Each structure stands twice: as structure tokens, then as C-alpha cells.
Image (cartoon, rainbow, N blue to C red):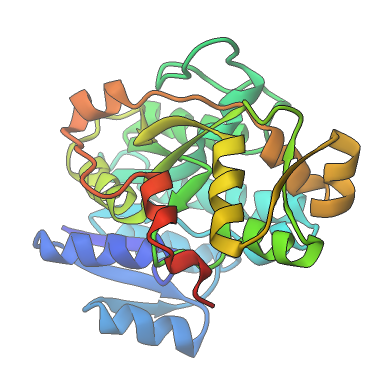
Amino acid sequence: MRIFVTGASGHIGLPTVRDLIAAGHSVVGLARSDESAAKIQSAGAEVRRGTLDDLDGLRAEARAADGVIHLGFKHDIAFSGDFAGAVKADLDAVQAFGEALVGSNKPFANTTGTMLLAHSVHGRLGTEDDAGVAGGNPRTASEDISLAFAKQGVRTSIVRLAPTVHSSLDHHGFIPILIGAAKKNGFVAYVGDGENRWPAVHTLDAARLYRLAIEKAPAGARLHAVDDDGVPFKQIAEALAKGTGLQARSVTPDEAKELLGEFMAWAVQGNNPTSSAKTRELVGWKPEHARLLPDLAEGHYFKS
């Protein structure tokens, strides 16, 4: 199949492109810069120059392709304070893809996160059957739009990424952000007793799941890119403290906002234990790479 991929030069997108090509698919990757284009070409894919704001271009590529993987997200503005703007751009792109694919029965793998279940699931593992609640997490709307198109002849699936997608390829995710904050503050912060749990997945295992979503996922499927179903955040903080040579320290929610900013303070308090049992059964996904704490122990996050 010919697959159009947004976010194709990113830390998850580029391994996804490579995995698709290794499995015999051809790929067209969206690139907004020369640097991104060079990465995509180096992986053996074609390049479409443009941005998520070029909705006509997104529609055209979706119609020309045999399937779409939407990994692009404006992380730069999201982490700098305009999360609402990043979410709107995502929703517009998802709507454009759906409109272009209606009635085609082509696969469309969209991306959200397991953290949207932190608002709706309590006291147990979140599952693929659980839905986010309206107003609980802005990414829930992206799922709702995608699943509506699943009823209009689009083989839509949702890949929910764990908050920690980790590997030596990860330079801008939550773990590097936490390391940067720790170096600035002089310690690694966790909130309260730190027993809230974060799921995690290795980058290469997440990439494999996107390919399987395109190849096998039925319309309307929710898939969980989760290997560790929930690592206590205090253990993550202690691993980061060991790697940086600093201490891990409990702080209050208000102190976390001062130290980490409002968005990251919310994230580090998230309790999001999540299962991927149905995903593994549905598409035959089998994570093969290191889990989070062993990956942190390898030291690659702390070399810069």
C-alpha cells in the first residue's frame, strides 16, 4: 500500500516510516522543513512539502494514498503555552482526512493518548473499550471525529500512545522535558507519594503498532500503544535522579506548577494505568523492546 504519513520525521514517525517500508509498503511523508524532508528521504520515502494547516494538500494526499497515518501534532506551540491552538489544528486535519476518505474503505490511523482516560477511568486499568469524557481532555474530540468517519466508509482506528514513548530516539518527549526541569531546579520532582502510575512503550514498538493498525485494524478500533501498564511515577523520578546525579523530592501540586509549569504539573500527577490486552489480541502486536525503567538504566537519556 501507498501510505501518507504526517509527523513522518518525528521520533515515532520516522521509525514508523521505516517499518512500513521494510514491510513492503511505499510511503509519502509530510515535511515542513528541509531538515524534515532530508530525514524522510533518508528512510526511503517520498516527501510532500507542507504543514498541517494546508488542508487542501492533506485532502489531496489522502485521496491519492491507499491509507493515512496521522502522527503530526504541533508540539512546539502546545508545550509553549498554546495547547488549544495545537488541538484545533489537529481537529481540522482529522476532519480533512475523514472528508477525503469517506466511502473509500481506506485505513486511517489517528493518534491520541492514553492520558485522556485519566479523567474517566478510576481504580482499574483503562481498556480499549473505555472512552474519554467530553471536556475531560481536548484530545477526546479527535477520537470522536475519527470514529464518526468509521461509520461513513473509512477504516478508522485510534492509536492511543502512552505518555512515555521512550528510546534513544526520544529527544523532546516527557522524559527529556523532566530531565531538563530537574537540571534547572536541582532535583527531580514528583507530587505527593508519587504512587500515580504512567504507562509506557518503546518507540520501535509503537511504530510497529501503527503499521499493524493500517494492515489489520477494523473500522472503529481503539488500540493502546502500551507495554508497561503503569510505572509508579516515584520510580520514574528516582530513575531520573540516579541518571542525573540529583535527588528525587516530593512536592505539593502548587509547587509542581511553579517548578514545571501548569501543563507538566498536570501530567506528572496523572494516574493512568492502562491495558493493551485487547490490542495485542486484535492485531497481533507483541512489544519486543526494553521497558521504561531498564531503558532509563541504559543511560542514553543522560549523555547530553
